[in-house]
Length: 355
Image (cartoon, rainbow, N blue to C red; front, side):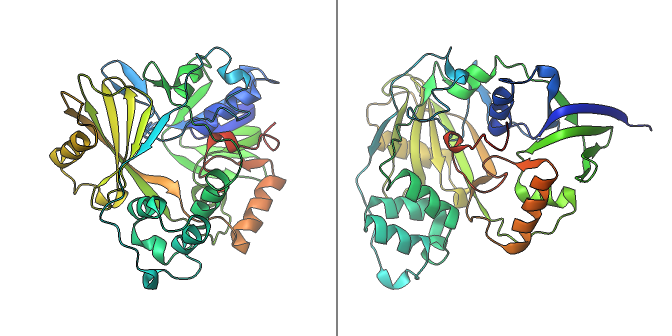
């Protein structure tokens, strides 16, 4: 069967937050016809889920009030709101054994920068005991930028049960081409081959995981591609907890990392990723009730598991760095949380290479 040929100025490979934000940014100097998003029709759109008429993001990606992104035209028409209210439960069932901490590990970094406190307890729940021996350099970098710097970092939550990104991006109406199978990317001729199409581009912005991109391009790689999973359980309730509130659970024996109220009647419990499939709804529900005694009518709604939730290591290995240089030379820009392993939140995106 002959393939259909498509020509476009900007091709965005991947359909997640980073691609959609890049699309909006490119619209400042281009028309819709200049930009095309390639979306894998089999991919699960985990960045937006629906529950009883509420469309929201289950993933903890929020802008900060101080960011250029939040103050850009993307959010001009979005209602402004109060920052997320954050609180912590009492530190419990946590004992520090310095003999278990290896030099250069994430744990040793956290202790040197923050001391032994609830952050270390939450880190153990988030990253498991691997943080005692492994560097998890991407995580170290994020902590350094967000939690031990003097930069503003006022998190913003939801409006009417929708993430700000969902609220505003719905208005973009981007040009999208669905594909069933991505076969290869030929960087020399600037072509993407799918099962049904050959897409010729001037610039390719890829937000798919970097190791997949390099594989499709036939380029060598040697970087650590490990990532941590993200696991969520959602509960409805009748009253007792307001939206845009986060509670971090600092009991090491609890399977809950944090609670986040999507609305006044829907709460998200983020569970330790290594506990996927091992934690009963009843156990989580009982802990929520313990943390929020005033909450009423808790009922399990659904769960979500994302195997690739958090990148763990920065890309520093020579083969991968050389391959990334080849991509840049040929008009391919790795972009996004897993696109180049260089940022963890949307407000940190560097637009200079895109526009």
